[in-house]
Every structure is written in structure tokens, then in C-alpha cells.
Image: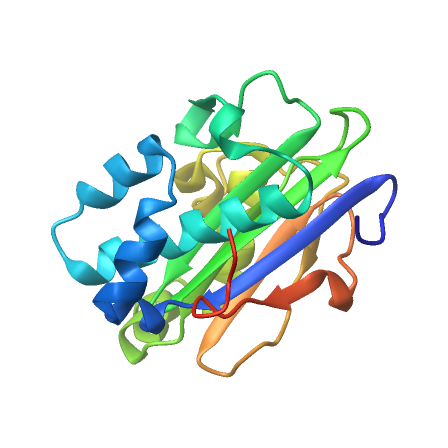
Length: 207
């Protein structure tokens, strides 16, 4: 396992989904997905959305395998605001996000379930997104902070946005500056060392 922080092993994986425009690679990775992920992917109407969902699922499978979990043996469930988690594994928490042609997976593993809440977000810096958020005096980076916090704490995003929900203490943000066209944020109870944030090439990944 990688370096632990405050007894919590936190890892973040990022990938470029454009490689999935290759139908051979797409089908190869889709075949390795668990049934719940295949169903989610196939429910999307547009290829771009299917690619994003597949990439996020691939990152999750990859991170679980690296940490000794057999994904096919884990039972997926959904909490408040539809945040997914694995039943019977309170020591394991994860979150997925995607935007544009990027996907991110953040995973937190602890010896006990206390303090392993995690949320992540990525947003493409499109002119439309920048202009829309300006109306609310908010930058794209600030938006990713808000969404990653909402996911980590399972707080209603709309209430947070309009200041109707209280902020829980003890959470920190890691804002890796990976590339200029995308904003990333990970919210958990610790800063994340840069060496625990990795880029994954879908053409080379092994599941």
C-alpha cells in the first residue's frame, strides 16, 4: 500500500477517456466490468457518456485490485444522494467523477471506518461553465470544492450552494493542478501527498 496519512490510505487516479474512442479497447475494458457497471454504461445514449462511465469504472476496478480487493466479491449499494459504497466494507470508501474527457477515482482505506469519507470532482474549464458560474460569483475551482465536499459529507448540494446547509469541520481539500483545461478537487480529512495522485493510461492498464 502507498503511504498512509493519519492512518488512512488515500489514493487518486485520473485518466484521459479519449482512448476509448477505439472500439477494440472500449470492448476489451467493458468486458472486464462488473454487471452493475455494464448496466450503468449501457443505459447512456451517447458514446461520450458511455466512455466517461466506463473510464470511471475502470479506475475503480484498478484501484480495488491494487489494494487487494476482488471487485466481483463486493456488493454495491447506494447511500443518501445516490453516493455508492460497498456493503460489509466500512473501512473502504470511494468516489468517482468525470467531465469533458477526464475521469477521476478517489479511494480511502482505513483500519477502521472512522474518518475515511471522501469525495472528488473534476470539471472542464469551458467558456460556458466559466460564464455560468460567474453569475453566482463562483469559479470553476470553487465549484469542484463545493461538489467534492457535498459528496464526501453526503450533504445536499443545492443547500450548500445557497448557504442553507452547515459546513462540517475537519475536512480538507486537495487541488492538484494537473492540466490547465480542467479543475480537480478531492475532499477528505487529510491533505493528499502528490505521489498518491497518479495518471493512468487506459491503453496500458491491467485489470
